[in-house]
Amino acid sequence: MSVSQSKVKQVKALTVDQIAQFKRDGYLVLPAALDPELCRQTRDRMWETIATHLPRIRRDDPSTWGPVTEEESTRLAAAKPEGGGEPYLGGKGHRFFIRNGAEELLLNLAPRAVWGIAEQLLGKDTVVWPAGLDESGTTTGPCFMSDDAITGLASHLGDTLGQPEKGSFTTQEALQLPKTGPVWLTGQGTRGLYCTLPDSPSPGPDFGSAHSDGACYGRWRLQMAAYTDDLPANSGGFTVWPGSHTRVWKEQWEAFLDGEKHTDKHLEVRRAGGYTDPVIGQIKADTEPIDCHGPAGT
Image (cartoon, rainbow, N blue to C red; front, top):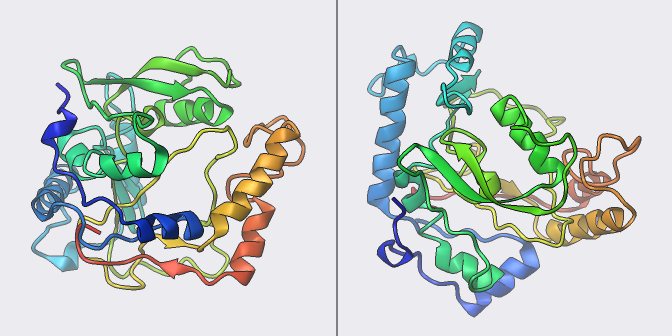
């Protein structure tokens, strides 16, 4: 059963200056904005999940917080739910993830709590409310069936659910997805908890993690990262390049007008999007990145 919008405590509305900064820089950092009790419950839920699936990692013994082995990774990956979707817990090396983004705790912690802010930035009555799971454990929401969405459905579900290989670029109003499916495509949940173990090795200067998500369809998506625990500087937080959104958008929009649909695999040369967008290399060369960090609830 969905929680009504009026019952979820909202994060304080943005000021005029904050909205102006968001438009200028493309991001905002709101320190300790989320409910600390929900952050604590989320951390507890994480450790409960680890105790169930990776019992060798013990919360009270940091010496056990070693990387996920290949054997463990393979075992976790094989534990796919009968109803479809990804394994509840997965990981490799120093990172693991929990696909609990459609559960009430995660929805109330962040997506529903910033609902008012989302409407401030995107417009009233334009944002999809995350209703969560129904009694059968399924989510239902609208999905813009772009090439990206089709690819995402296939990669996270193991098949295309009968969808064609290429997107129709129309909205499917009531796409049903399982609990651990790509519920972020329909606005019905987050990707879940992403966790990085302490003392993880540096990825090095050539690590190609900086990327842009498809934004050239004439539709907007507000994205966020929520820290459920204290995160010091230079500890693996979200990194942004101020003002890069305007440059990325310009390149993607021009490519879109010329016929590219962001991830069309039939194109010999991709001009925009993903990890290989040429403008991203230029931005990384001339723009100082910002390491987004802060206390729990940021």
